[in-house]
Length: 155
Image 1 (cartoon, rainbow, N blue to C red):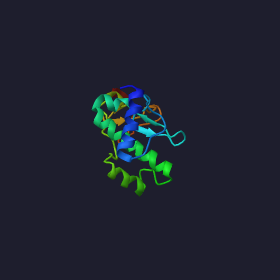
Image 2 (image 1 turned 60 degrees about the vertical axis):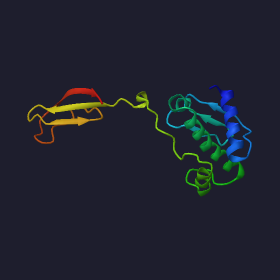
Image 3 (image 1 turned 45 degrees about the horizontal axis):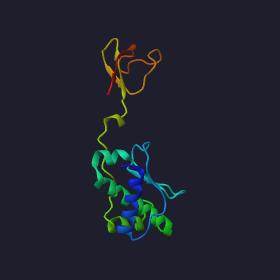
Image 4 (image 1 turned 60 degrees about the horizontal axis):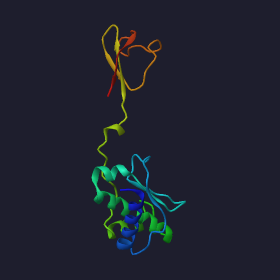
């Protein structure tokens, strides 16, 4: 699906589900990472995350479009268009739009976390830390002996 097909689909859903025309632009935005789509208040355009269409298909895409169109139409009418507003929640139910989109099954979005494992030179107590520490400034909390970096792993 390309941007022209997306635009046609958004216009069709707007007329069919809301009974109102969509007069702005709908495009795929490849920079979106954590959301299915977004409605831009300043331009009234809608941006959609292509990854949701690729992974879940057209039904998920239609749900995301309906959700963003709820923001769009309520904002233009001067009603409550934010997620917490009663008008928004009511319209979501009326048009059968999801409140949240399905989570992406993409492992590359998970940030690799480094774990530092330190060990006491005397009592062998193990300390795990997310941040690196200066071993010349810190000592073991149990026996007050020196500590050293044992291993640096990815979690």
